[in-house]
Length: 322
Image 1 (cartoon, rainbow, N blue to C red):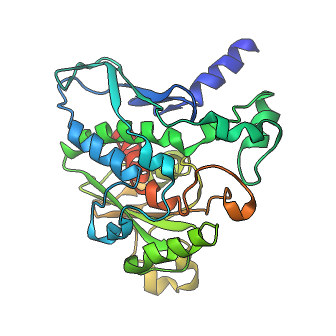
Image 2 (cartoon, rainbow, N blue to C red; image 1 turned 90 degrees about the vertical axis):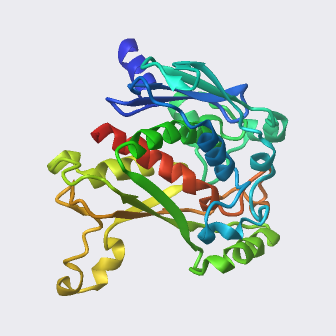
Image 3 (cartoon, rainbow, N blue to C red; image 1 turned 60 degrees about the vertical axis):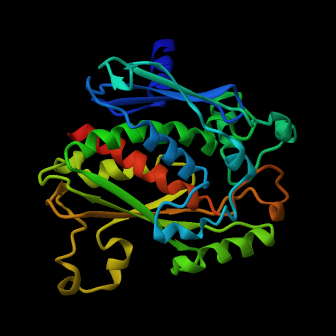
């Protein structure tokens, strides 16, 4: 029984089987980080790309026209803007080249403020994992949610960048973008929409679309190993993600088959068809808001900073097949 419990605890923090990523650390602990195993030797790591992607996750820098609403940015938590997110490489890399051995890295939490969450020692936040963590384990880290905090996604971005660089060598690109904030679909109005909710002490959700190009036909397996099933598993593991669709998705239910039967989203029968793979995912509004009486440093729209995390988890999923 003890052996089973230990194995379960270890496995729940590991993503992948052939190309594994192990995540560790808590939001207001000393550091977060990860271990990558299965990365081939000889890969030249693009450290500038990793720094840029971490900055993108922190909402510090616009990266494309559709994300021009950053402006410095409206709605991003002060912690995200203050954390330097500097990666310290512990093993598996020599002079910027992978050795084929496990790659270990850490990101020190330099703007952690555990004292801000003392009130949560004896209180549960509605809409968060506070209560269920304690029900399951008999103990929880009340400091900003511990492992359940979105702070953990910074480690995913680092691991995902290395996966993206591996895929890039095979001509595969992944690009996600925010396509909707609340009911607003005009990217030029996203910033004002988020600012209005922030001014009111509230939050709003959003939808992210991801496009995969260059994925060879035949990726994925029928029945239980379908490509979309693996993508959904990866994306739904991201904090605050509440839904996944590909191709026509939920919108297809209102259309006759004659109108949509040629729209595959790049996948048929669980196998890629060689065309662009398109999927979308929805992120809920954070329940931690001043209007809800919750203290802390929170985003007015978590979907904004989830864009590079979606790309990272997509890359970590795809390297398993290739």
